Length: 502
Image 1: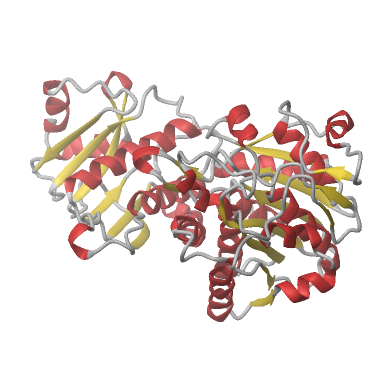
Image 2: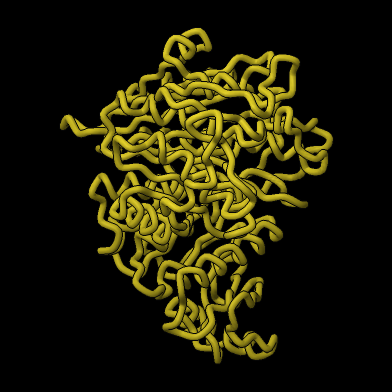
């Protein structure tokens, strides 16, 4: 798909379709006003004829408007003038893409970057446009036969119109960043959507090698089970015991800063299929447990973003990959394993395996002398109950790091919400037989899981993102979302010193 940013007059643009905004009470945006003037007032006549008011989510498609070279004009309601929020703007863009997808147009010019959005400049608006377009055209149909593959959206060219030439540099910066971020989101979505019989730990390792071959700035290292055993990763290896697929610990190192800056380390939970092990899950929706590696997918997607955009940061991505199956050698409730940190863990529930995988990866991260460490995991159903599908759960031992991640999430609209990490929650994890149990009671399950992880992250600034509620959608639109690649990418852009608003 071809994107461009240009200063264009709506009444002069030749395109299959142009999109302009209408505010409440039929107040015209600048581009809509230009179309009305050029058509001799015909635009406003049609607006009144079709009783369009300009309310949020309202649309009106007009063909062959007099003296307008564009074949079709799509009007979109923008609500009250001067009151558009970030959420309203994103919803407007989604509405537009739904209508364009139905229309079958091949090229479109969007006059939506001229709309005022509270506290946001043209960089942000163009970035949202491109990301929304890319999100709307994504399809995972590579495993379908040609006969059953649905028709793809026909849009091939998108022009983001800007009001002034002085906006071009910032607009093009937003476009470039959006394309790079969308590429990373697409990779995360693809890996998440692949079934467990294809996307195994070995497959993830091979895709990491492929990513490194595509970007010379990325170096990859893959540890097998024998190497992990020598390192003392007893808890990670306890999860893979029931599977014939060997576990893999994958490291992707991106060095984009010439200065010897300490890296940010991202750790992704990569349980490529989670049956629950001996503590087996209910059958309903168990197919969705292929998404239990979406934390790993988001790490790989974010490394791709950093390398594609050439960000001046140092980054290490760690993917702890395994299956969790109830084989004859699988861990049993009551088993005790020693982690790489030397702490012993009593496994009271084998379906609380993500924390067993992550705790060894958190210890392993120390060898990179990290500035910050962020782990990303589809960790608990309790987080879904607490926050639903709108926000990831955020936990941290450092306020500044937590604020950075929250801010990145707000700006990218890939939001997180901070939950407490008080000492009192750790009481639930006491064990009579080991240093710590892997689960507490039912209360505060997302918090006690984070509390467990915090025991292995005492040597550095650390944050944990529980993405169980945001990593995929169920129902008729079932599929991976690619979250939180946008949040993590913005976090890296901020570390690179990129200006958010001019």
